[in-house]
Length: 236
Length: 236
DNA sequence: AAGTGGTCTAGACCACCAT
DNA sequence: TGGTGGTCTAGACCACTTA
Image (cartoon, rainbow over all chains, first blue to last red; front, side):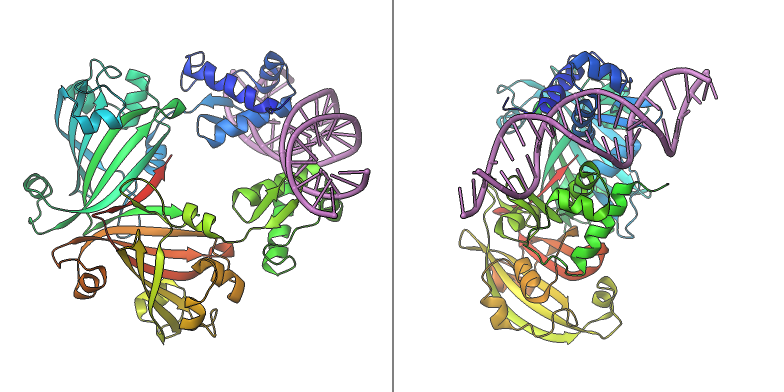
């Protein structure tokens, strides 16, 4: 017995989730039932669930049950939105979608999204306003095969966050992402959209977002005016 | 019984550590002994220790024991160094200390370090080379009261990382930090030190580092040339 | 009141490390 | 070989939510 039992249980639960046995937001069977199902003690089942909770794949609520995690405003603001106003307060941006088109991926995008060269991708351009001021310009690339049928109206009329839309309409659950941050100069497009002079210095953020098993499903490039905002990061 | 027992045990262990009962790097008594000491079961003791391990305050090693965590190159590189070469590889920077002086804190620094206005602070300026190329210029501010006796030779002749020096010579254990990242223009000093034209666009990183109980003990400002490097961040 | 997750216990056994 | 942390079990009881 080399591999711990709870890791095997964890793997089985994760597999059931990705296979759609329990859609996002639905409760799992209770702990004693699950432990019976897997033939392990409740303690071992709990250890497996604890790991999945830590990975934000499950959410436990005392007295209610254990649920497959869903994206919502709080989660996005807390985990996936790193731009803060200089006053330190984190506010949700107002997202204005400027365009949405289906195009062929260039080499760069195809590589990042693990697609074949020339595969179709959706390209969405958004303007982000924070406190009513244009703060960032945002380009999102999504593999067309996973997001078939996406259109600008769907994007604009979504009820929750962008990641909530991915989850609800396309079954794509974003679990984590990596970002690369660099300084860059302001192009003509950014100057116009963000209403700033060309001489302004911007922050460029490139993000790769991943779903289960670390599969990349979104690539973003965001350019931020850091005069009134900053990019926040926690270490340790 | 409102507060869980294991949180109380955790608090007591943390308190013992901060009071110096077990210096950094030394092993704690074994689990059954500790559980007897606190009058709880081994399971409860383990839950308390698990939390402290998660917070990187303790380190467990199967078969050896449980130790108060120490700073080393791996930890610094993994948790406290976010600058990567464009090839994605994380390399440890070569740190060249340009100056170290004791000065009076201005309002800004005093506020960030929770000091009274005009308190003495050490100001250290470093040039960071990655792959033999100047990549960043770094200003560190430390409260003099905690780092009494610091001098440039001590700083230059340290055997490990900067945080290792804090820990070993001054008993200051850095546990976490927050960073604010902005884009900025290149000043004359940066241009000279980093051997770049004034027109280069830089990344400015401000860091507040904290020890036990979230007390701030270091403030840094780093300016990075992001032509060959980027700032990396993980979300989720 | 019934059902859920959360805490705590006591003990058996395993895997790893030092000597 | 003896000591350490790691896994796993079975069960009692607590705290919270819902109806």
